[in-house]
Structure formats: C-alpha cells, structure tokens
Image (cartoon, rainbow, N blue to C red):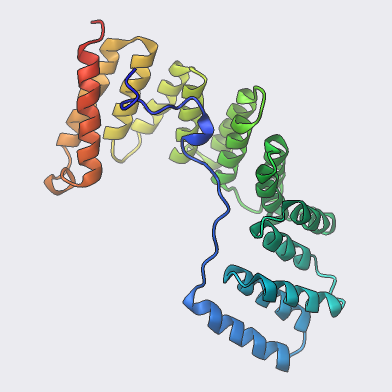
Length: 283
C-alpha cells in the first residue's frame, strides 16, 4: 500500500493519544493569586494551607524552587497534610525526578487511598519509567476512586495496555468497552476502539463500531473515508469504493465556505489518492 495514503495504524498508541506531561505556563492571574496568598500567609491563620496553595501556583508558573520552599515551610508548621506530598510529587515529576516523585505519590496515597488524583499522577510517572502495565493499573484505581466518570482515563488505560510489552490487546478492548458502558457511546471512546481493532486487524469489529459513529449527528466525510480504508484492508473492494463515494458526497453537502479550508482541501486530496488506488484494485 502507498505509505502516503495509509497512515501506519499498527501501533495503537501513536494514533490518537501519545501522552506527554503538559508543560506549565505562567498565567496573568497567577501572579495576582500568589500576591493574595502571600498577604494571607502574613496576616491570617492556617498558614500551612496557604503555603501549599501558593506552592501549587509557583509550580504552575514554573518556579519550582519557590514551590518546594513553600512545601518545606508548610511541613515545618507540622501540618502533615497529604497535599504536601501530592504537590511535591508533581513538582519532582515535572523536574524529571521520577523515582522521587513516585515516593511522594506513594506517601500521598498511603494517607489518602481513595483520592483519584494520586493514582492519576503516579500513573503518568510510571509511564515515564516504562512501566506501562503498572500505569494502566493505577488508571484503573483512579477510575474506581474517582467521583465522576472520566472517559479520558479509560482511553489512557487502554493506550497503556497497547503500549505495554506483551499482548494486552484484550485488556485494552475490555477497558474501552467498560468505558462505553459507564460513560456512554462517546465518540472519543469509540474512535479509540476502532483504532485498537484496526491495529489488531480485527476489521469487522472496527467497521461495526464506526457504523455506530456514523449514525450520530455530525460530519460524516472522514468516517466514510476511514471505513473505505477498513474495507480495502479486508479485501472488500466494492464496499471500499462505496464508502469512498459516500465521503465525496458528504464533502459536497458541506456549505461552500467550508469546502475550501485547508483541512477539507487536504481531505479531498486524500480521497483522490484513494480513488486512484481503488481504481487499480480488483473489481
């Protein structure tokens, strides 16, 4: 197959959800908040809590030295708040000190075993250490202890199973199906499931899920294109051409001004390339 036409989807993790630690950036309101907290520290009680809160704003602003100083100050006040360990772990993780971050998250979770924030934070560091299965398990704990359903946690967990050494595709599938059961047929979850099935060459299942997505309100052209590729990979060339024709029709139904933006022009070029390929395929 032409490498310019088909994106290599055989590694599920690279399709949608390559996770990186989100960089922190100063926000105009952060300096004001830090000034307010500084005032509170000097004039009000419960200084320990204010030190921890200010440490978080310093962390978000990238001022890790001051953030750690504030956590030390809070600790010296004998606050013994688990939040100190959670914030310290996040700082250490952002500094690339992953092993020390794990130690802090472990301490936080020992004190607060029902707090999903600790499991999520530790999962992200475990991934950085190449411990994908362990990270997936922590996302499961985050799901179990979370106060609300977060579809992205199911997606993250499935991605980690797909990333892990060994065959964990069944585990990834089970996670996404559970996510759909608990959160509903959210497109992001279904899209992840389609990608997983495609990566394991289970094209029939991928097509079934993509059909459910197509039945939802919204734009259709990209999913018709996706289905045309799936049918082509199955060797069902007639269906592939039908889906490609449906993609063209979906584009033509769009308002004129939407048909000339860069994304749609690129899509039409991709459809043209597929049509050229399909024209040379068996009837």
